[in-house]
Image (cartoon, rainbow, N blue to C red; front, side, top):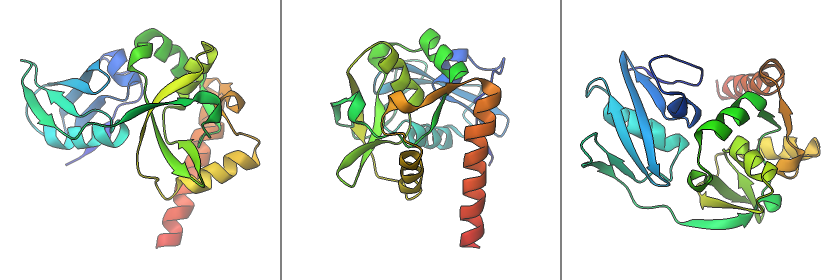
Length: 204
């Protein structure tokens, strides 16, 4: 079974689902999730193939979603609810160096501020953002001082990303430069590809 998260424009999916990281292909089945509120989503799919696998993949990226409804509004899956709390945005250490200007624009067009929540983890007594850097940048641009967050386990690789970010002088989301698509691909995606290739080589 092949699961792919759709991150680029694709006519089979809504732009909102793509931008919110809620569009997936499981083999030939197109599955997307519609966010109803901060912890509830409706699942839309061509058929039933791979629904459970798509939900697990969704929760890998959005662990705060605890209730999955079918298109009739019935509960298809439920999980323990995340504990949400507020953090000062300026106090959150990024684990990313750059923000995509293209993604930032899409978030402005497709995401409600009330739906924004950021996964964080404690590292050396400091809160680190594990994902959602574009959303954090959006809040910072709006001069919003606090973000709604929820705690997740710290992935092993994140500490290395944080150390690299700090070595580049990045200690808060205001330090993350906004890049056009070509520069973002060249500077951030290429860095990630090279990093994980080296990590994989060390494990082999």
